[in-house]
Length: 303
View 1 (cartoon, helix red, strand yellow):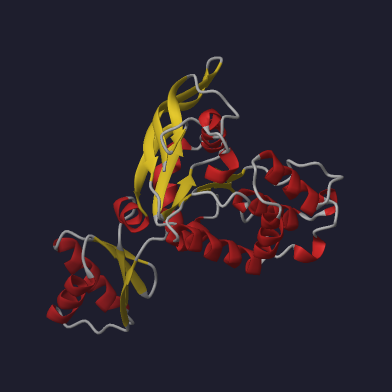
View 2 (cartoon, rainbow, N blue to C red; view 1 turned 90 degrees about the vertical axis):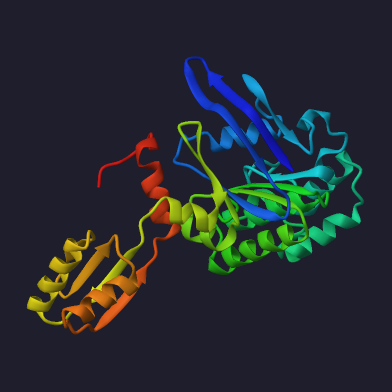
């Protein structure tokens, strides 16, 4: 389990992380989201003892990373896939990691097989593509068979098959009761992978909730109604507004907020309007995320 208590990090006058307090439970995939510059990487670095907090604490199983006797057996992490000796082979790289933490050498072959790199175990890591480097980084995270795993953009550089493999791996690890903490900018993938979400913006905690609850709480459900006749469309829109809903005409279709599918259907029936389609439109994680973080984007660009 990961625990953050009033975690703060300042660089001079700039506050990168501001009083973050949350827990990351075991048995779930927790997605870590936020705009560029929000403090996600800084938070993960403090969890791994690579950066010292200005105040507060970041704990793994109740201990600071520096207090863990064999850290790779308790915490596995992928922060930067290319943070390795480029002249060393994939197998030798993992073997050096294993020896540093008293991990059996046989474990190297096991994790290489898990990530699909058995055939290139003797190849220099510096010759790996970005996707292969990601797979090697994941192998390093799994090496000590740890109960806690941290991944920063694990699907970066992977093809669609590799992305699906990572998704299945994350969910399988969580199903084994491990703590899986994943930072990503791919909202569609997080919606498929994560059970829980932690969202930060400008170093502050914005949300800590299950995925479905986060989407429902940060976006408004809409109803789409296809009405073939313009006069009927105008009549239904007027009736909906009288009932307190918001109805927008998009040429052949109404988008309705503030009324359920059942309410829209009943009102259409009441005034004798023929419909060609009636469906609820649920927001995606990306839409909910964009609405929540709109005021927290530090490096926005013009369209």
